[in-house]
Every structure is written in C-alpha cells, then in structure tokens.
Length: 331
Ligand SMILES: NC(=O)c1ccc[n+]([C@@H]2O[C@H](COP(=O)([O-])OP(=O)(O)OC[C@H]3O[C@@H](n4cnc5c(N)ncnc54)[C@H](O)[C@@H]3O)[C@@H](O)[C@H]2O)c1
Image 1 (cartoon, rainbow, N blue to C red):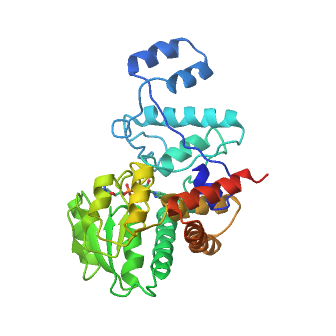
Image 2: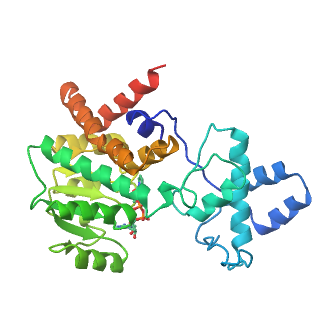
Image 3: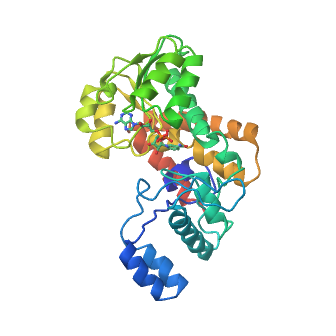
C-alpha cells in the first residue's frame, strides 16, 4: 500500500488492518478481567477471525431492533473493537472495505471512530464503485500497454481475464465495449456462464491454465502469486496487466524472466491503484466524475514507468519501485 500510494502521488503512507478473534473460551476468560482496552488488545493477539465462520452482518430488520443473525453481536463486537483501536491511532490510519468485509461492518467501526471509509451511503460503498474504479484503472493501463507495443486499439485483441469477481467482471465490460476478444476464467462456473452470456464472442478457459491462453494480454484479476516461474514459461501473451495484488510469486526471478522473454509487465500496484485513488479523493470531497479523471491518470504513471524502464534497461517492476522510492524520499 505504501508503494501504491507513493507511485500514485497520494498523500498517504500505507497499511492494512487484519482482525484476529480469540477462541470463545479465552474470550470469556478475558471478559471477566473487565478492562475494555485489555479485552481489545487480547482480541487482537489470539487466533483468527475467519470471515467464513464469523458470519456477515445482515443488518437488522426494518423496525431496527430484531437481530436477524445469531452471530451479529459477535461480528459487530469485533468491528467495534477495531473501531476503538483505530480511534486510539487518532487519524494516523483510516480503514475501509477490503476482502471479507462489508459496508455494514464499516458502519460498526463508525460507531466508535470517524477514521473509516466505505460506510453505508458513502460513494465507495455504492454499486461496487471502488471496484469499478479499480477496473477502470486496469482498463486504462491495458490500453496504455498496448500503445506502448504499437497496438492502437483493442478491436479484435484477445485478452484473457482470470477471475470474474467485482473487478474482473467490470474490466470485461470495458474490454468488451472496446472490441476486445475475451477469454474468461473463474473457479465459480456461474460467473463464467454469466460472462459468456453477457459478452458476445467470449470463450471460456480452464482457470488453472488461463495464464497460458493464446492471447495478447493476460489480466490476472483473482488471487495473488499467480506469476510463478513455471507459469511465466507458459505465458503466450506479450503483456501482463491485471488487478490482482502481489502477482509475482518470486519477484526477482519472475520479473527478469518476463523481461528476457519480452513480456511487458504492468506493475500490479501501479495498475490497480484505482480503488485507493477513489477512496483518497472521496475523503477530500471529490465526486464520481472528478475521481474517474484522477483514476485515468494511471495511464500517465504507467507511461512514466515504461519510459524509466526503457531508459535504464531495468524491469518495469524495478522502475515502479524506484519511482515510489523517489517519492517517499521527498520531504
Ligand atoms: N476490489 C478492489 O477495488 C481491488 C483493488 C485493488 C486490488 N484488488 C485485487 O484484485 C483482485 C480481485 O478483486 P475483487 O474485488 O474482484 O475480488 P472478488 O473476490 O470480487 O473476485 C475474485 C474472483 O476470482 C475468482 N477466483 C478465485 N480463485 C481463482 C482462480 N484460481 N482462478 C480463477 N478465478 C479465481 C473468484 O471466484 C472471484 O470470482 C484481488 O486480488 C484484489 O486483491 C481489488
């Protein structure tokens, strides 16, 4: 996050919040000790809060009183404890929606602190706006990368998209509208089916081998770590540009091998910064149009990365790191 914010010229450092939940027995014991602070910090050091077992907060019924899920108080407690912790940081850290969380969870945090985004009603929580901005940034980066290789348009260009979740699906919409020929893969068959129906001419691929599809652009939009040394040998694309965080499994080996094979790598944190750019500008009171304009600036950042890589004969991943580090070194 630090490098992503720095390279995107955002006035923030970086961080992620991770929530642990203590086992019930330890929790009961701890509650007996009385002190709220010690309960919260103990909560933060024991066990895990697995989003699959600590159920999503479904909200309350319209009367505002009846809890609809027996786990609601447990989950609400966890996010309120996180809110109390953030309040103690006094604005040094602002949290927001991420993997495994919902706007309802952010609402619980908001009951304890103002240092939270993506609460119900905010721009970031509406219609997957943040993910939409991430997808738009990735799309802009794919266009920039193609131009860098002398390809002026997406018309008829085969693009393989791995992962058809919030970002991957929205990316497909942009690519399809621009005339790209989509190759789509997801571990959830219904998501593939929906894409095949929605995007004429799209073809399905095996999610385990989509990186090896015969395409111009491979867009990883599922999990991190997909670019392993073995996977890089199987790539048939000339551009890797996707939304997934931390795509490189073994950074040095993988970036050098891609460079040697003439594959242009759009560094993940440059390309997928649309979400954080959107959040940062929403915090400053910007509206959707202004935010979209800012996200479009990813094209310029990526162009600078490619120029620097070419001038210094270094991998694009190194060029991006250097740009971020230059920015971090500024007062
Ligand atoms: N949402 C954002 O704004 C945002 C911002 C920056 C980065 N990212 C990154 O982009 C990626 C996608 O985010 P998202 O919000 O769309 O998540 P998501 O959970 O909505 O979608 C992920 C999709 O990937 C699929 N998937 C999982 N494993 C797969 C596999 N092995 N092969 C193919 N498909 C697989 C899932 O079934 C799901 O459809 C993640 O790596 C995330 O960290 C997201």
